[in-house]
Length: 588
Image 1 (tube, rainbow, N blue to C red):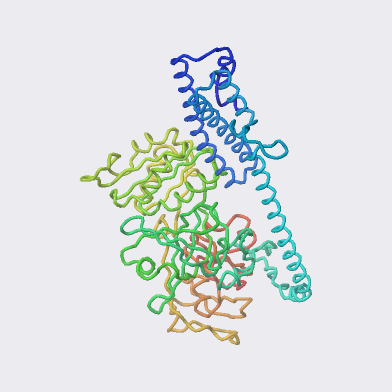
Image 2 (spheres, rainbow, N blue to C red):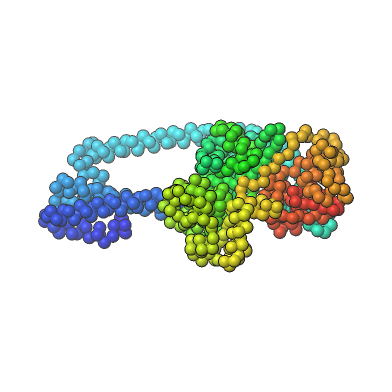
């Protein structure tokens, strides 16, 4: 009955009042103070219980939701106790009646003492009669809705059953897609992987993509390609905007993702196909939309396009999710997120997700910006820091003169790190920022004693070291598709100049095409030159979109972070990285 929330004062309230013949002014003041205290503490507990209920529902924690609902009920009873007592005092009620009113309120026996004076038929108050009538009407309406829905469901099932023969007749067309077993030839080749995932679905509207989840159903996993509509655009700083994307049909986003993964946009800009990868900034627990936060770069082809040309309501070609720079809370019991500039986007995605799922671990965000004007997500972080007891934010500005900034100034250094994060060397660290900052931070963390295995970075290619999202911009000419009748093709000077002698050949088994393989060209580059379709995103060995089965031959790959040990053992290669001085056969 809420005794645990009231404390000893509420437990002693009833017997103390029952023993009093009357109330002195001092006693009335004390009772009024107690009642107002119950109302105040109960109101605070209602807010906390509502927050816990929201987190539990987001995380699918039914036990936690039930516990939060119980807390909410007890807190409401506590507020009711206080208001009932204050009303009784205002009416000059004797102490024994005040105690009885309070006790009945705790037992939920009577909604209002005055309702008992107004009695209707069957000896019930008009309040109870009206309430019962409303409940009966509501129940009848719900029953009617249920019957209508069942009728519609039965009609839908009948239509599906009648269409079943045509559906299953088309099923055999999916057979025969299992890749042929590669011949063992050493190197990275090996037996075929029976669990190799199918090729990504063709681009097009979400409703045309295999595996798309209609509204109300779970989003599909794996790589998705299609169009999303720009639902809203927000200004974060003078040169940073957030783009909120939704499914054009109004349902949930047609894919699921992990905090830290990225999307790849593509658009035709000045007659060229341009692709650009941007990290998802929104929470992975949010299924109604997905957001990317994009900085307008100097000479940035795609960022200029997004900032100047894209408006609310536009449809964008999107592929994803990709990337392994993720943190879901299962990897460690605490995390340190270190970011600079727009590199905060994957870190913010993790913070939002961990908040939505009520993750109990400690979260430390260490952030550096040029000035307070460039502090991305500042107001949101200030709000989250007030609500999240496990979030600790430490920010420093490279330049803060002439502003109202009261925090640290300068670069992130050893003292700033060790003072902001206790036991730094024992914690998992995620690092994302400009190349220079990334290199300096990795060196500093190593000097402090953080094991290399605890440092996770967002990187888009060896040439740039570790580059924050957005990643590499890929620009290619828009060419007419190669005729499917062609079986042997060589690169022409117009579309794929060869910069070195071709000492080997590559055969694409599915396309049945053969082409020269220069030692300085990747499998992906040669495939593009002869019109063999191989999907890609980052072109830097990070995203894994261009995974391809190697059937014969040996390759070298400068970067292969997107491949697991099992995938390497089963002959999978990254087409954007794979090069060779010998003949190759790949499944494309």
